[in-house]
Length: 188
Image (tube, rainbow, N blue to C red):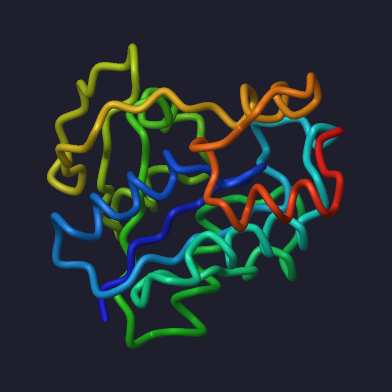
């Protein structure tokens, strides 16, 4: 089975994440998309993150109606911060029958050479790159494949700030995720 891995903090997961995942799933030969919830991204501050189990639950709620999407907590059991190469190694050991492919925004591709063992990732995995506002895709590599996807500028930071300031986030989040955030009083 060919599995697309969509790594992220998902703090919170929003409609932009879902549109990108669905577009990449729909326009490629992927069998499934796994949303890998990262407890701690080495490039982001941890203090703004809600608990990893809340973020995982929001992902589960957001993708519950898509048969080919899965939520993954694989990085919860790994050393922190999470490094993609370590997660890929672990996933390959646990699921040797799968072929894994990484989703990457063009903004992350710009900084890809800063990733731990990025050469090993490029040597073994295909990267499906989707456009991000203000970031041209300039990489040329046989394992880097550009996917035409909507150019979205929906930010989890904007959503968190809106919630903190008492503004509506309707249409930015799946309804069940919005309900979960309000019920748990997250980001207040």
